[in-house]
Amino acid sequence: MTEISDKFAFATAPKIHFGCGSLLEIGSAAQHLIGSRCLVVTDHGLVAAGIVERAVQVLAEAGVHVELFTDVEADPAEATILAAVQQAKEMRAESIVGLGGGSSLDVAKLVAYLSATGEAIQDIYGIGQAKGARLPLVLIPTTSGTGSEVTPIAIVTTPTQEKMGVVSSVLLPDLALLDPELTVGLPAHITAATGIDAMVHAIEAYASANPNNNPISKALALEALRLIGSSLLAGVLKGADLKARSNLMLGSMLAGQAFANSPVAAVHALAYPIGGHFKIPHGLSNALVLPHVLRFNAETDAEAYYETAVAAFPQLANVSEAERASAFCDALSALSEACGLPQRLRDVGIAREVLPVLARDAVKQTRLLVNNPRTLSEKDILQIYEASW
Image (cartoon, rainbow, N blue to C red; front, side):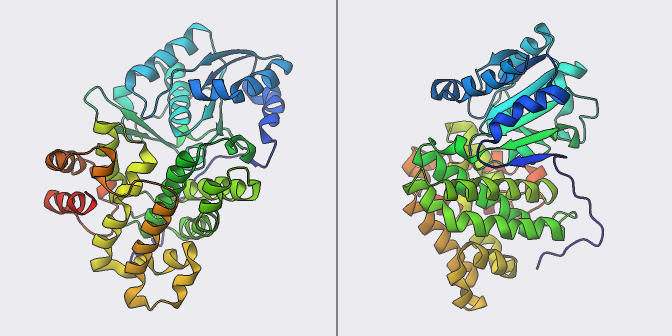
């Protein structure tokens, strides 16, 4: 059983505003936080959907000069971040607003920091390397999965397709605005993948072997699983269901707070090479390996999943503890399938021959693997990929 530390720290965004219509509050934020010149970091899809235009209009009415950086892609590359930093410097941005999924929010965090400090991005990879002062930062998620709006983490794809993380409390935003209405038009497959992603955050945070595993993160993780487990299928099948959308967004945020303080582990370590090599969305990469990593962990630490299983799927309270971890893995697979997600690595075009390459990359994710309830060797990782194939 994962032990809770007698001594821990917990940090999150200082201000969180949640509720339908919260996007409009960005205008009042302009008066005390955003200033007169703002760079909005987003992607082309949100521009086409009209969401960016709504945000810009509110900011313009508040007297803010706005420029857009719209070239954020999934798993953003170093070059993308540096281009946004350059634009922020050239326009003399006084603040940064991140609007979009986790990639846009991660880019916004790094732009706010790097454009203010002038540091090289390579110098801040790792934990606690970013120590300077950043520009004011507002984050507005449009998906319910990463929880990036309340985490001190930004993930970058290097030129060698390696996933590197910048982890620092400096990256926590001044304000997180969560408006469930922004997710109503989200396609079903994105709703599904991001929802499973958030469940992974909660499950791994709860079971984390990190020394900072703490009762606050555990409580948040269980509530996140309760909200997402009860609402994900409705959000996928009935995309305009605002109750489901609200539960998913709140659950994603709570899971983000949980894993920001009790970090994630092997599911993410195995998911990153899948995304890096094959451009598979992060949430789907997590979903593909999730049940197989949990089965591996449960062989030695099944107790870590007793409470998370019941939080996500209340009916599992009727399953004996001896069988509950296995039933949990089955229920997660069934939910993923019901949501329409691919179930095997081969279903997304990954050949069996490349699995050793993925394993060699995953074993390098020591920042994550150290938090896993059970130690993994490269051989173990390869066997999990084989089971996922």
